[in-house]
Image (cartoon, rainbow, N blue to C red; front, side, top):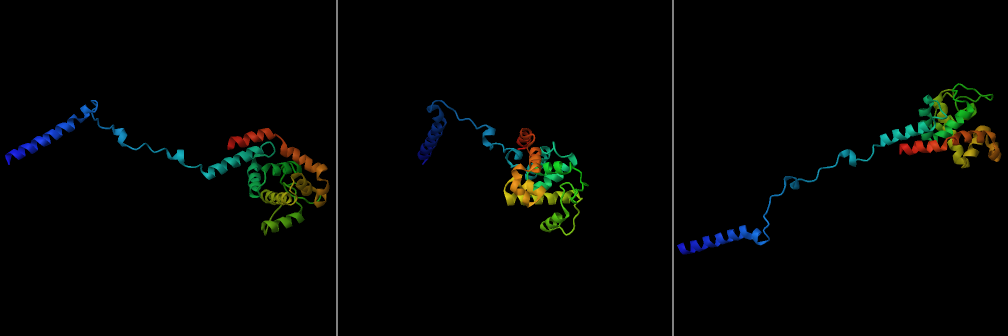
Length: 210
């Protein structure tokens, strides 16, 4: 019995020696504990680096760019309302700004010889029709925000009907009969000159906001 225990002890001792000698037999390499950093997962990226841009921030930057895009036409106090009215009806703010520049030069109290009122010189009869379309039970054409809303709705509907900005401008000023000679309409051409002014500068403004 004693002999068997000694044999087993010798066997386990041999195994232990073999385990300890294994690194030496494999080229002399010794096992080293891994560095503490190797056991840790890579650091998480900063949340700001992975989150998409805030839509409200994008919208604010776009609104600022649009306001800057009409700075050569509109006084500062009117830029925000013009941008808001244009965006409501998916218009380029410069269309509204150019119309107002030609119509009234930004005088909200202007009254035309045919009774046109406000910034965009809307006839009372046209205003009544537009108010119904916009769902306005009460309105005041001398109120700048209301006038801008109605004017934007009107030019947007004309663009949808005629499919051409020059024709829409001619009809805006002279009624449906003006569509026939829109190509030579002086009012439309004057507004378009204002609308197209500083095109290169405006392209830079919108590129900087993107």
